[in-house]
Image 1: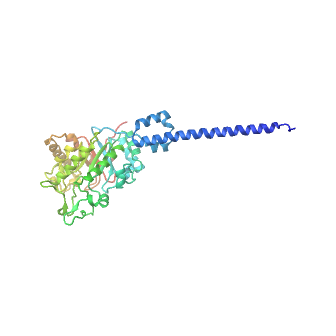
Image 2: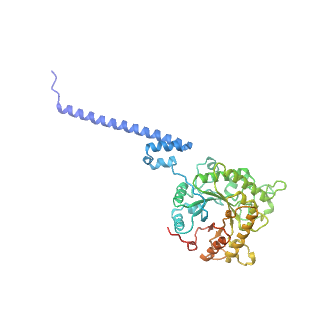
Image 3: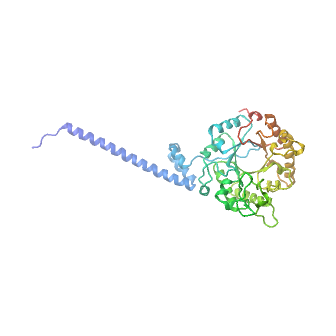
Length: 413
């Protein structure tokens, strides 16, 4: 005969079974949830990589986009890229890539923009060292390897600026590029004497304006930058070298062609290609004397061969950069109104003569000490000369990014 069952033992066994059941259910439930999330997450990542944003948004809306953790948002690259229309009157300051990537320095300049008439910034995409200020996902640009992390998260920066209503102009130093000429010497301007890479007095080398690979490289940078949130692409150093043994430069001129024809061919190609599918605003920086000179000054820049291809042309009319004796002034830097008034009068006349809109003219003005200590009054005098020529856009240049807030009109929010 078997012994009677122990009630306590049965209770313990029952509790153990219940607890085990709960644990198994919890594990299976979470495993299913994790598996489901991983499937959705991987599907979303694939859709993001494929550029299928509409379907991706549908999945995320069903799931609840806010349920995504920050890591998922980052990997799926959900930071929206926005753009701002070009203001009718652009009033900008220049920011180097290093400054744009420095939170404290950048924010101090944003504060000036918030409080004054400024409404735009010019940020280096690629400066005259040849390095790109931010990392890019573009496979071709990654292969070149010219990107640096001066700006850690470019989309976060462009998004922040747009939230404040700030128009973003991206500056690309085009032909002065010691990084790329070293990496790809076959793309560089060569010496006539021996076919080697030509260098100026400072030892700097330039890309060949006739090289199709160079054209496409600049185009790739411009398109990628627009996709990162830049509203306008600005081209600088769009010229041949200005010093050194100029007689030993191989300009690769076709029969009957001039230096300015080579530069114009690049302008035509770039402006045509960049505006395919979407009308991206583009601008070009020219030497200040191009507004008055009747020749290319040895660098291939002619006003008349530039302005038809761009939405805006930006003469660098810094008074300190005009030679002693210009317009009879021993030190032109001391006469900012007179220098800029004369330069822009000529720019307007040249522009009207070829039936172009004078609103395309957007001068770079001086806010740095050279030739004179540039005070509030000297900076405002340049703006006055601009307005008196019926031009209402300008950009302030200071290579150190230290501007004169008192020269700017305050705004009431």
